[in-house]
Image 1 (spheres, rainbow, N blue to C red):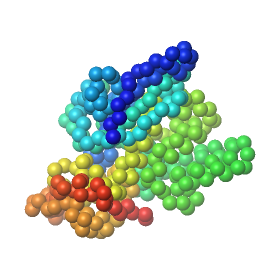
Image 2: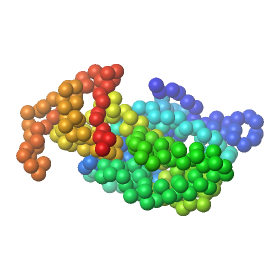
Image 3: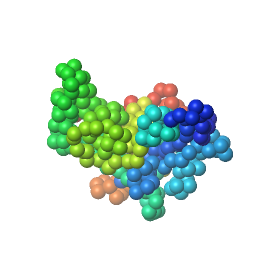
Image 4: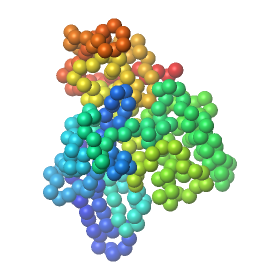
Length: 321
């Protein structure tokens, strides 16, 4: 639901924290050549954003206006993601900023190149999230020892236990399963442990050095993590993945797109059987010959799929191997 909000409101108390500003922020996602990418501005350090202004007809129209102004990219499918209102989210004690974020799905325009905006792989920001080739080396070699040191630095045994337990759940340590949906929880745990660059800017003190991963301005990486987690959840019960696909595609291309978003492999036979059994796609009668093997059948998604599956959903079989 698109709620209205005021752009800037000043309090009357004269003290700190009386200025309130509403920002609109977009997490715009595309999958290009099997890699999930996000639309960014400011040397890839920020998401498209801008203040909600009085002449904006609605939050969505304001967001679309800012994205098109900053990136020249029109938005298609979008949905409200989350509202961030933490007092210290931008490190400014004199102004309270409320960010209303949206998730947008689109296709990347590969012909355009610009010094002010561009597309960047989201695993550049979260290198520990890509498990398609197995557990990334950053987890056992860097994250595990750093998180262990953080847990051992706790003031008492209960806090030590709590910290390490949260780390094992979030990162699938100590023989726990990796849950691809816990993107935000993992980032916030690393922020609490002062292992990401943004923690230093927010006044979080920690002895450990920042781990690999491209930082972003203010809390934009936290908002991006929220968008990734939301999308990883949604692809399991709504076929929003089709918003990212070309008009026609092979089943392997569809599978690779799901795997790119989930950051892990899917069970190929079950995936194809499920897609076909639930009538998510229909054949075009054409084939693609540049697949490196025998020609692959081309499919398109049924126009009624989104409406039909909104309630029923579709469960995509992510591999647990």
